[in-house]
Length: 602
Image (cartoon, rainbow, N blue to C red):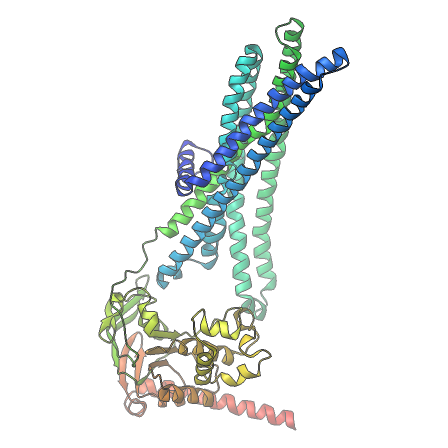
């Protein structure tokens, strides 16, 4: 992507502006009319000052007196022009802001909706920092030129009006003005060509600094526990210093060109006064005309810069717009059908010859099994056997490369948008809670009463500790639920799923931080609940697995064996070694804890 104001960037930039204008026609029209009013009144203020000089100031000096009517007329003329000019400024800024912020909000909504539509596999390929940048700084940069755009349009109207006024007032002084305007335009163009690549680089570095900061904060536990504070600080410092240097480079260019851009109009006024004085002495122009032209030049100096502001923002806008469009046009979105999963009874799950992989690396191979309605099925396998990936396909976070997942005989790919989440719930291995109340984290906006919330909490064995919280359901749990223990967070996440009364409930090692006795009560409660579900649980503990009606054992992404817990203990060596090893580890941990407790008590 070229960062200078090349013809290609100009074309793309004007395309971005065209998108905004077409989207907000009425607002842009109001902003443009207000800016045009400002432009015309800017020229009008010079004319009004010239009229007042000719008819009020000079007669007052010449005669020592001026008619009251003439004085009032001059004052009203200047005041009226000033009020209209102020109205134009207020309207221009207001409607330009409305247009800009509406487009930014629209882009952020579109990007966020697209994030939700895109499958999990697409998110795996894009870092969180980049996604945050797309929805924030890129959306902001894409529509940054909209703020000075109406003013630039008003400047065009102003220049045309000023040119006509100058020609009709005095062609010779107009010629002086026409020489100054191209000089300002050329200097502005050189300024923007120097500034644009530096500003674009600063924008990119700003996004990189944000990404590093997000990564460091998100991984604060790893950073602190492994003593990586100095390394992370150095990594952040290096990029922050690059950003500092980039911003200083932008400041240097501005410091060089701003005085020159301010000086040129002043030189123009000086040239007009020199030529005008000669014209005044020869009687070719009056004093009022000279004041009018000179004052007009002083007013035009600043607004002309608005054209440069638009040009300066175009490269950054093109970069931001294209990054946003890359998300909106991503091809990873899922297709949906029209089928539904109605009913309230437990669902039947069927997995047929399912394959899935990441970037060509196979994770699941020909996986197939069934779970009958109302039954509990345990999914067991060593680390890396594909259990969590399989649970993601069961709730259609990702689609299999081959095979199918059927609920009540319906392929999940044929279900309408939102239909899967209405019948199937997943409690993932990594529990996430929002910085909200207990009630807000359980309902997540679902219109259910507190009675249903408490029923879900009881089923998740969470009602006891929630009742003991300072404000009960209204207690804030902090960011990511930091005020709660790991087991408490898992039980709230389970209640969040249960309050939706799923027909198929999938627990991906979702009770690993819960006491085994509490876990057993949860599973027994799920089986005996009035609103029963078919339950698939990814489990390691033998006590948990023994509660299941059937066990599916995976190795290397394939189903090796299935049957009851006792059957697999007898005939499947891999299964037996896995679950007994976990039980030995649990027993050793409990024994070590008991020894430490005895030493403390002694």
